Image (cartoon, rainbow, N blue to C red; front, top):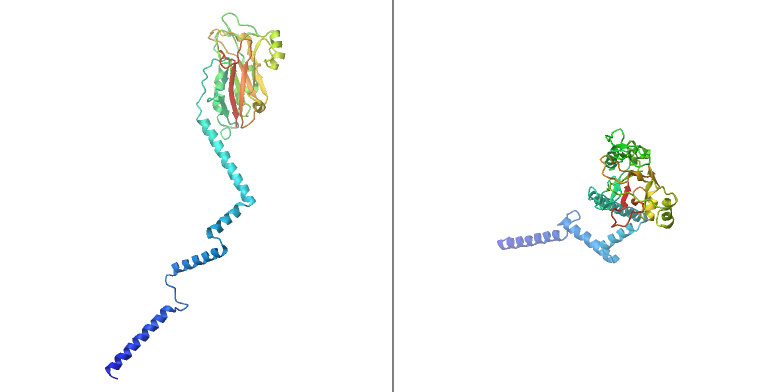
Length: 333
């Protein structure tokens, strides 16, 4: 074989080898891996999903949305959603109420001259007396501060601690010249004494109304004619009037408050004794007190209370001086 024939045979062999490699690239075997395996498989799967969604007339998002709507339509799911919403709303209300209470001023300063003072001292513009009843330290809250105020108040009436010299028992009569009448604090209801936390631990609080030492003022008594003609007077006052007391009546501000406040117990009497008037600046003067015991106040409800001192010369309008009306809001949790 000459040189020309050898060159021709090598060219033919080269062309056959190239054709063989081309066939191998175009027709891979089953065991040969696909080029760009991950990306190619994702494209294939995506295309299949799109083809399936297109065949059904919906997209993948629409399918998922339908599934979510079907889940939300289940009665049990609706019930749990309603419970969750209710819990959130109640939590918001409670937090808002507590924050509002925390923001209230320490004590309310009433600049209007009145014929009664309220103890414990109400807080804020709503004149709120609030506490959580129960045993300390786990249940009770706030009431120790209230009972401390009452303990300090009644300590000035304790006969064992009195250093007064010019006081005497009056027995319903005016005091002798130069003397002041003793107000016996031991006559108040046993439930409203310090040993019983003044009722605050058990949720039956005692509120003290004290005469604020208005100088040279004394209540005028009603006549029989007054009681018959003055129809605005409280029924108990008209039919059970005791001229030796300046009658005090407390009630709820409206029908709901009257129901929520429950029955009241007054002690030692339902009014200030007349022989404690007028106040003339005596250094040992003991201002009279009427104690209100709320026997069954509604728990968790704000109760608006109005107390009025009744006498012929007492005016209950807002601009009257001195004013015979006091208001406060009681909230027991």
